Length: 364
Image (cartoon, rainbow, N blue to C red; front, side, top):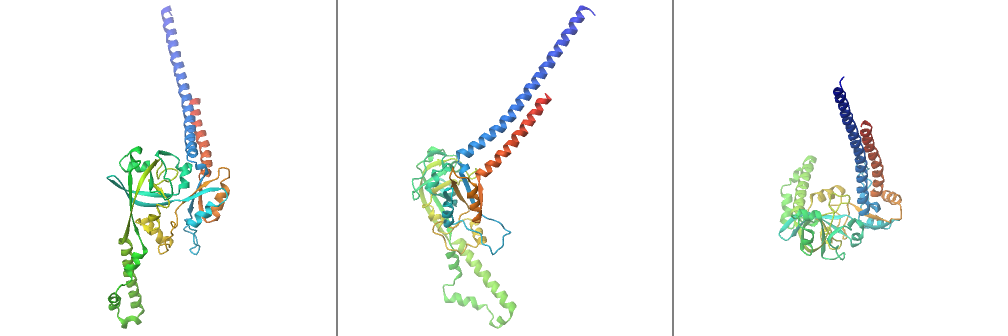
């Protein structure tokens, strides 16, 4: 081997060793970066969720729902979330505030734009909680009877991507149609003697002794009466119109952790829409038919609610409140309980990410 060959072989070995070292170091660096990224990703998600819970005060929030157990015995009547029950929930030990989810659907007009949107009645005391503290522009209404309304960012998108500052002080027109039992009953009851006589003209008196004929005639008359009732019930609707002033814009929508309708109005101001009959919504109609409250008198303070939100005392544990709510015959959803479960999930999630990053590091 000549000196030239020796130098060539040595230079080749040095180059290959340097390249091997570079690849090894690069692999280790990438593996460490992947390990740190995995841990940071899990920790970042956990911090984001924790921050959301703390900013909205969800750790001290509990939601109450009626039980929907279809296997329950028919003779057992489920407890109703009416105003009296809301007051009972508010007086439970550890509960600082209780307010219902009182929502309806209306046609909303702002300027030249008209859209169909959900509205929610909210007491003034509820606006002072963290759940509704994220105000983007303006302020909340000044009282339960104020002629004011607060809209959400979702409403701004629905109305054509309006800016928050531009809607403050503008007029908002709420239009809703409510149906009443009285209009359906009035259509069934005959108003003239001629109408009564017409009902019996097609009845064959000689056939009344036949059971089949009587059953067929009764079913026919009941079907006609039911058709008249629903015709009057659905088509004779009262038109309610109210003009409010937009005083604020808040963050949130119907798909967040806490459901918020696009429009929020004071509790007393909303009574015209919530106590005048079933709002023009097929879901409300069939819900009233299924739970047997269709022919019940309207509660002047809002009737039965689908949901009640409880604001808990920060110094009191949530478990006794949850047990009391369930003992009253309702379902309780505690955000604090869900958060404790989420923390366990995040522990396992972070461990899994750490294992993946560790495998990459060991492989390198």
